[in-house]
Image (cartoon, rainbow, N blue to C red; front, side, top):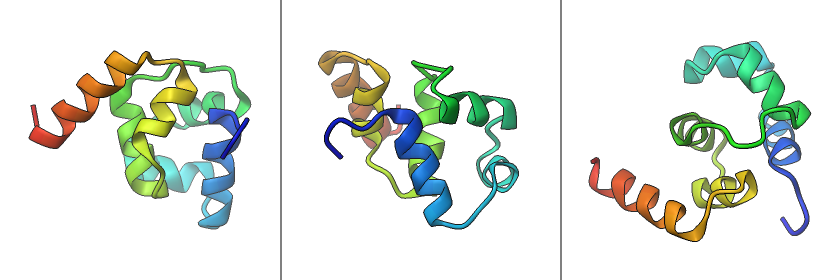
Length: 87
């Protein structure tokens, strides 16, 4: 996963699961327009809740997705703790 963008990671994972953007929207509740913008690289730093939903459905590393989105190490650590403890 070296030198890969969030856009490429999400799109490739979705295509590997053989699902459309609309199906991903249905499964995650994330707006289709948002998914499209993420895959085009137009949405650089999505909300962590969006990333979490996509990570779960696409079986991706949530922390790696945050890193690719430009979140700081501290932000990633805090988010991981909150998710782990359900805060």
